[in-house]
Image (cartoon, rainbow, N blue to C red; front, side):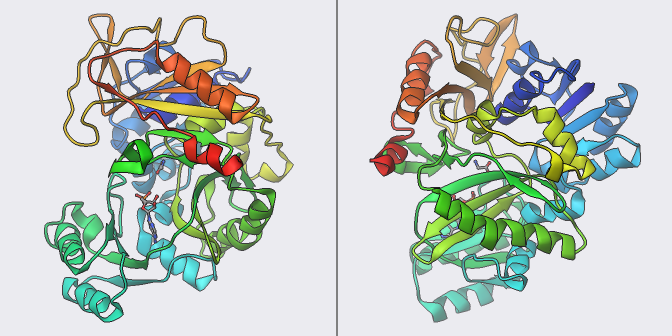
Length: 428
Ligand code: AMP
Ligand code: GLY
């Protein structure tokens, strides 16, 4: 099969590496891809959001299957547009992608179908947000832009001034564009967070191994929110008991609700959960694989990814095995100093041969933001590389990932030194 993966970060690289293990995958492309991905796939410079150009390219190259990995092309209806020209694709259609693309949609869905989540109210009038929060007078309070906002549309407000500022940013200054026409004001929840990615075919849901993201830029969960500085899998807080409860109270009801609403979800449904004192609750849904969760989840997948993906498209997931190996995985992100604010690009990366560490068993380097310049690999983004190791236990995986990352260098490299520390503490 000739396959196209749409996107160009660490998640897409991990998907490509997993797909390439399939004996049925004979040719693989990535658009737009990046410098490091080009060692593993043919790259084509088409923006992931350019639906028309992507569909034309897919037709021209006669791809047998397309994996739409990124949120915005899904929200723009790329899967629908591919289906219209007869090309099957992995991912939800436009209607189902609303589960991530509109927080108003997802919150209303959870309320209607009694799926546990934070209490909330929806507003389109800035003055009403402020009046509502003043009346409740309970801090912190969470303010979320309705639409996609590059992962930056969630503001945790500690006091009244923060709320005024959040409303200004989102609703008046329109920092996230039309995504801020509506906001969701949410009760602040506490508890450990768990990411659970799951395969869905519209009716059946099969969760993958659980994982834990590390969103803050600095050690000790300090500093600004980022796209993710590292991940571990499995997540030790996600015990069998919690998993059973999530399946009954959250996963099955969500998939049934989407079907009932006339927009069955096919693809990867990501449950961002918080294990609160009142039980597991949904913090957010994503309509795609998480980044950098994918970089620890897929290396533990034993089943053939292509077969499982096709089963979600064709509605045959119930009879398709989705198996993960025992053991653990850890991913340490190597970022450009300054990220998530201003950072420099174009720094030469040393230590890698054809994008990978030589002679480093059980370690894979996933490229998030790299480019090839005059035949040399250089940094080209905030998150540059993800170093993933697998092992029998989490401490071993972490040791291997950190030891391997010591062999990679570029100017102003920044990484957290405590990825997995909370998970290890929870295992004590
Ligand atoms: P997101 O950008 O949607 O991934 O959200 C960023 C982070 O905000 C989440 O991972 C949570 O840590 C936090 N968050 C979102 N909603 C809530 C909430 N209702 N209570 C507490 N924290 C939240
Ligand atoms: N790691 C969080 C996300 O992919 O949204």
